[in-house]
Picture 1 (cartoon, rainbow, N blue to C red):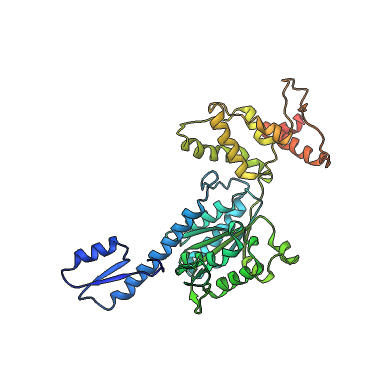
Picture 2: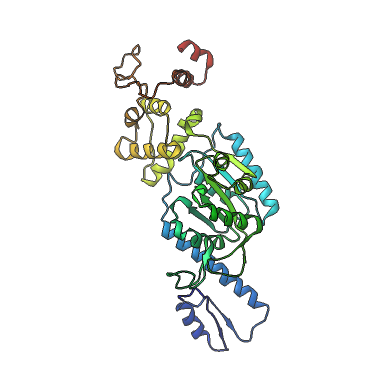
Length: 377
């Protein structure tokens, strides 16, 4: 139906064939006479749920979002405090069930904010409901309001039929707004109303619609700084900041890099139908020496590249030396530890950072034995 109306068929006794044919042609449901009046709200609720699911499905197909390294989530030893924080949020969610407060995830690009959002949804009380993922940075400004809040027929030139928005599609479930800072101030105000009052209004509509979508917002820039500079609405920032989680960059999780590489590698190897893979000692040193500006996304890509182009029985990552200009012994002489291709950058060189990395490498080489690491240093 072009205008987005759900069609409900009512049939008399003996009309089952007509009902089946009508559903094949697009009817949402049917009622057989005689029927109980109490059935009507249940059938209408099923129709509404089907429309929301269909809108969510259309959005997933339309965006064709590619997952980086799957939806695996590895906390490791470095994120135990963050894990405890998120589990407390989930405990509160199970007590509330409805009108769940928003969650704000902040972290550099590639730290896994989308994966954390999916984990929160899958671990919470709404795991059986819709999870609608929206990349706000990819929404054209002229269509963003219609995408999020829907529109009525004739609301603008191309609005040939009524369409529900993604807030409605996520009703009863979770709406993940990735890169929320990309939304215009006007849209930020509408998002604030939707979160605080649980109400939206379609473009061209006159009536308010109740929605209960749990909002998880993410940003690769600190919203506090953006709100102070006027680039983000301060009132929306304070509303989102109620439950806040900061995901650290991979360079601050060096103790987990090898375990995380193994964890991601298992999923990648399985996807390529490989039973096993092994990271060589040289490969481990390369992983530990790299700065990982692309964070977990970059790590996942490096492992996948090595599995495809290298030897799965002895993975190494030679491209990392060229990318980072890191310390790597190429001559085989243990006394010569500096990569001869390395050059001082024009922007300057952080000696303290280099010392810290040498200390980390010594501790790793000594398997955590601090005394042995001290002797190596």
